[in-house]
Length: 144
Image (cartoon, rainbow, N blue to C red; front, side):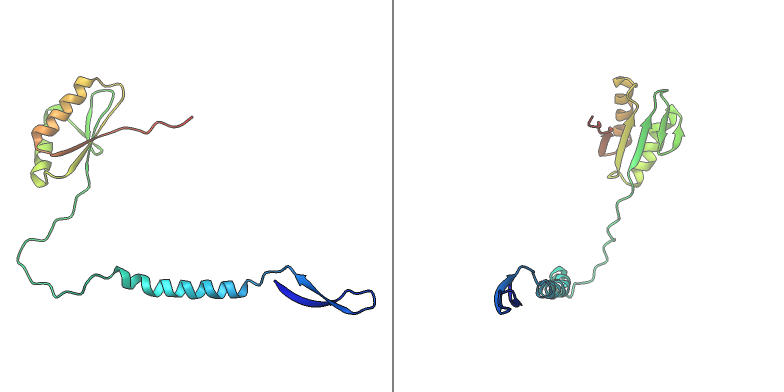
């Protein structure tokens, strides 16, 4: 709070009255300095210890592929992604995909009107094909 002089007396003299205004310029200056300090030091904190790593002939780590989405609609039709698959062709196609990468995740989506037996049959085919990771997909219920 700053003290300023204003003519307020009855005889025209000056009295000291407080002025209730905040000077934000120093605060902005401090914030900008802190911003610059954090912008300079943040990249330095992310850098690891500098090392001269040895060379190797090992194969490069493969990147994770997109998950396989397996769907079963209310009519009993099976889809891999958007491609419709005949019932007898499902397991061989899954086995071919599992041969490429058995650690790939399989998302199984089933219409809510299908039977438990239909879902279990599809899961058993995924298991027999050789996949290790299977997840069931459901829609989150909305709050009303």
